[in-house]
Image (tube, rainbow, N blue to C red; front, side, top):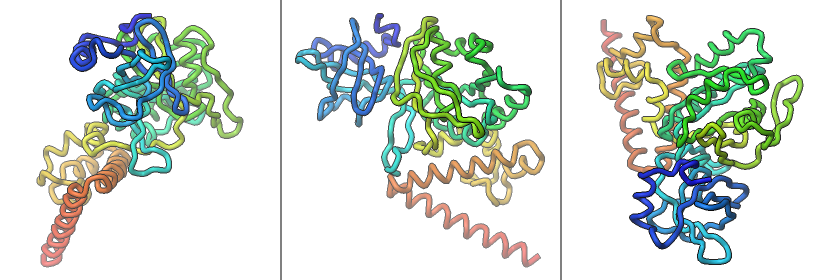
Length: 353
């Protein structure tokens, strides 16, 4: 295979030639498994180790699946010397480490948010995944799987749409192939997508269908609660016969957010659009007078559940920003104090009337 099959393009070549030409070779990370890295070079797939200190031109941290790297082939063992600047990265909070990010996939164009009809799509989980996708600079597409097991597909799709009313939804069956061609429309050659969703929703089965072979191991979900086991234990990038690259990820039981408030706004465009009409530019859409968002909720134009989710995710994002940035912490707390003072003054005026 050629590097262009894995997404190599003129932009990447220009970056690479500026810093690493005639020194290292370009390659893409296609698998990460407990610290081991497999990379696709121009001629073959090789196992590589990561240099203790990466080149300053590279990204900070360890390589993730989808990263483009500068590979040193001068020794017996291939060495990753640098990570090329990422277009974006799908990140989550590292388990057990609240203030450390873990890249799930890098340089992703599309995030397929996979939900199964067996337990019914989870709107709140979809909202969180949509926010993560926008934060990574990728387009979210909700994929409702196992439609061959569903007697009421319309209801399942509407439930998924509750969590992503402005994103495209593709309903499919990896067993009989219905809807798969519609999904492939989002994966033209040169594009990279990642499958994101909990265990048991059929990510590996879908990957095998797209590959046209049983390459990834699969297992059946448990009876009673329809929960699956972690058949995927590593992250892996594969090139599909139809073109485009796909990254399969282990099931994530809980999506720990690693994103800023702007990404939350992007996941709730109906709230962001109404916010421009609020009386105050820093309106929180909670109890402020002249809040256009609250008025839209009262009029039934914005779903109350969506506003509740917006507030919940925004609080999570801001709490993270507070921990990481003392200046941001001061700004948020000052705004909260100002908001409390404004409410108290409004109540005093109301009581005088």
